[in-house]
Image (cartoon, rainbow, N blue to C red; front, top):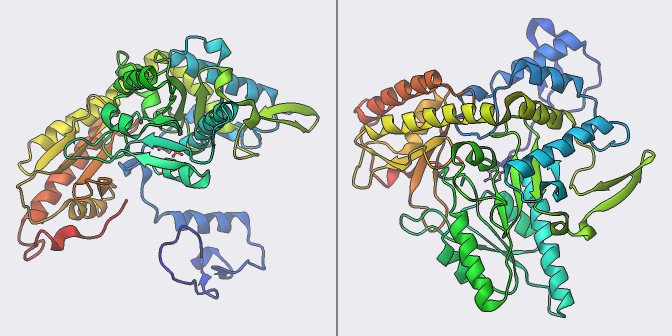
Length: 464
Ligand SMILES: *Cc1c(COP(=O)(O)O)cnc(C)c1O
């Protein structure tokens, strides 16, 4: 059974797949095939299997890029055979990677961008692991120098992406998560301070919380940690999880101070494959200065005739995503990224304004001060005949994927629904979704949908 499969169902190993007229013989479904199959029918078979996947352009759940320019496809094709780790063999790909790191440091106002350090990763999750490890090692080294114990590190965050609980579990760090309370669905400086002590390796605010799309108040948290240092003499660094926001805030909210403008911010991760507009498989982490990445973590490897310094979880990785990222940077520049981010933002805020016209919905986030998109829930005191899971389900019937899910503790009672407006989710496409949403609400509100739905009975299934 694959690790991702939820159900304890064992496959019928002897089942076969049949390709109809184009396949001469049926193929085993789960056994390793004995015979060869010609490329064309094999391709057709795989292609047909994939028809049942959702249509990625209608997937309003993902932050990831689902539309790229033809030139990106061409570069990806040209780089299909390039292994990023073979730095001696493909020095120019390495050069493009390092240019991207400097460009990101510049974009994020690194005061000494030439002295920065960073690398590409498979995504923000790998970048988060690297950022977390660097914080843990810096803390450990300092504690060792002070002859203090190093066995109980902790990390403070708000409603984070699952990569942070993973980091904490895999690398043995206590996660001190600020819970949501009432209408506060983000971390606050006060709540962060309550959890700080000498074993805190860092604080991780999220720029673009996945649950609501809002930015956490980085500046206020940094100021609070300045005060904390003044009183207690403990210097707690900040790592920003800017998976999505790293490519929206610089263009949509240039006045928001969240990046290396704040001295306490030591590292930032971003997903190149989200608002960075690269194809899937691209993330970045940038440290403020070389000193912020402990040398102990960097491996000096002799391989294929060269020396390389490497800090990564993977060894072999595809080079195309990095090349495509560089293409996007030179192709679009600040002006291009701003144009695209603004149009995404306009779609999200338009959608929010349309939702406001419904009696039954309450906006949690209106698409303006955070990531492009919007988040809503059923208005307290309104008891429609359906819940947001029903609505998500109904929209799924038209191919739209607009997820409904509960907020994290302590607001799991609050079920929200979210749409992310990315490049490729045009105003026109969002308009079609809104038409279908109106129709779905009308249908679900009518007695035709269901005889009657109790509020409790409607809690339904949860798809996150
Ligand atoms: C998407 C996301 C991640 C994980 O990033 P991947 O690139 O998918 O690995 C982490 N944190 C936040 C805030 C995200 O939105």
